[in-house]
Length: 288
Image (cartoon, rainbow, N blue to C red; front, side, top):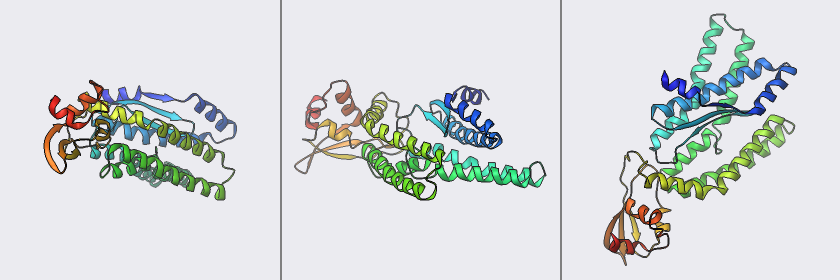
């Protein structure tokens, strides 16, 4: 109960949302908006509650004029399975919400029209969030899928590029089907802006990923994945190959022959504490 109350304290309502509420009242769409906000709030609470169950750091849950977002103070070092459940917890809320609405209909608490509206709003939020476009839930699932095979940086970049391509396609569909739909244009603008910002800051996100590992906040790795490296590779090149959800014992080769082993913590210490970003990995064999 205490955790739930602390989660509620992290709610943030964007000032423009009050303007949207005012417009909804003046245009007789207040009931529809309230239903939509309830659905979005429960969706985001699903993310937040699941994150708290894994002891994640939840920064805030924001209600925006065009949706909501649960912001976490995590940087890619939790297990992929944990992150899957945190992402999936939002969409899964719509299953019981629709079942609950159907129960209210069966007991005569709400009308058929109200249930139809409630069902449509749930499906709209669910299907939109499952679009494989970052930072929607579907885009995060794509990122997790790529992270199983690719290093952190490449998986993140591929996710953003893939999302941008799909967003252009979605934009084209909107132009054909609903060119004058204001809400869709606002959402499209938000998605374009989010992708642009995240692309510009991708190296910064990568550094936070490395720093979290360096300071020992990578939690318990479920898998060791040896990483073969060449003795003349720079430390920067090697850390760019680090993957999520695994710890890398580093096996150093020179001309095809194994010449030593390093722990990833030794590499990260040299990278951050010693500022040896351009040094060769063979230099660390003698240093440590």
